[in-house]
Each structure stands twice: as structure tokens, then as C-alpha cells.
Image 1 (cartoon, rainbow, N blue to C red):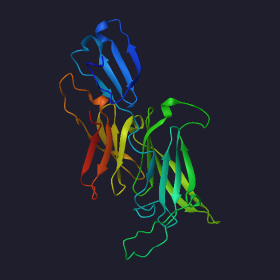
Image 2: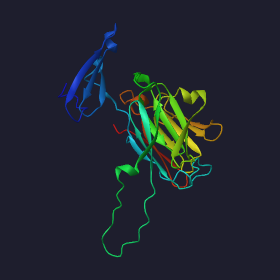
Image 3: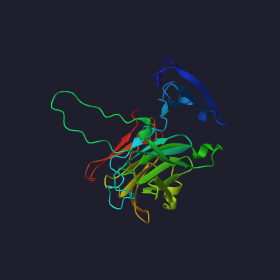
Image 4: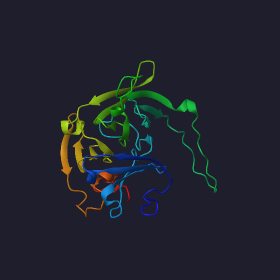
Length: 271
């Protein structure tokens, strides 16, 4: 095996065989330190390359809104101070924080750069989103991908159960305490049950693109009081020869937009 196939970049730590009444359909699966799974069709082990299955998530569990939460059109921030959201995605929940405005500094005239440090007191947790009751375990609701909109007013999370969309808005109480209102937003049925490998928001926060890992399609949602399907892209990966991994083994891992929102780049795992 090691002399014929070298699909893993590091040591193989686990092997499993999927048996079938028809020996022609038996599959060997290997798991390596490189976090990949590789599957081999046993009756054609010497002739065919293995199929590689890459892990989720592919994005960092920590994300920061690129715009102030009061800077977009219709942004939900009533404070008007353009505070920025920071999220930390865990397996079972998403923690929401806001960052304070940094003090204004003058431009340095020499080659030195002054760093502004924000201590732990400056990071304020304002909420947590859980998809099932705290203390319970349900692997279907484990979060494997999430995305925060540029202005921090939308948050989308993906699980093996489907896709959930939330709107976020900041306000202040009469005691000047900052609170975050988190609202679960209804999405079309086709998206609610969609198992996504990646999400992308347009720079103007008006649209959300969902990459379906099962059908290999991109669904564009128009965001607003009513969320609707705007467009669906099909056939993103043309059919190849039999020994080339199927689309299910090369999920879309990243969606990025140009600054004006006119162009979108789609990234897959490399094989």
C-alpha cells in the first residue's frame, strides 16, 4: 500500500473497511495526521487513485467585521459609534463580542510604529448563539462553518442539519449598557436544509451566497425584511474521467468578492 499510494502527507493513523455483499464495491478508508480521509476501491486498488475528503471548517474560527456595525444601509446599530463585531465559532455555539473604538493617533514622522493595545476589559461579550440546548449533545447541530457580514449585521452558520441565518443589532439601555438583539431570520426551505461548505456576503451586505456541498451549487440570497433566492449557479465543476474525485470530495472552501461586488472568486481544495 505504501509503495503504491501516497495520498497522505503525514502518517496514517487509522484504517477502516466498508464491506459489501458484492466484493467489487468494498471500500478502504484511511485517516491521517494531515486530517484528510482517503477512500480506495479495493477491486481497483492498483489501477485507481484514491479519493480525498478534506476536513471542515476551512475558515478561521475567529472573524471580525470589516466595517462598523452602524456604517451600512439599514445597519442595526443604534449607538452610532461604528463598533465592530468579533465572533468566535465553537463546535456548539458562536460567541459574539464588540470591540471598542481605538483612540485617534497622530502619524509618526520617523520609522517607528506605535501599537495600540486593547486589554481584556476592552473586549465585551454581548451574546451567544446556540443551536441546541446547553448541556445537550447533538452532532447534527455542530457548527462546521460560519460567516459574519462585513458590517456585522448578519451572521450565517452551517451544520449537518442545515443553514441558519441571524440578524444582529446593537442598542443601549437607559443605563448606557450595550445590548445585542439576535433574531433568527427565516430563509427559503431549500436553504434551510442546505448543508453548506462555505458562505460569502457581498461587500454591500445585500446578498449572501451559499455553497451547497451536496449538489455543488451556489445559491444567492437577497437579504432584507424578506429573504429570497436571487439566483442559483449549477455545474460548477465539469464531469471528468472516472478516476478523478467527484465534486462531493472537493467542496467549495472559500467565496470572496471584489470591492465593488461585481466579481466573485470560488476556491476549492486542491487535490
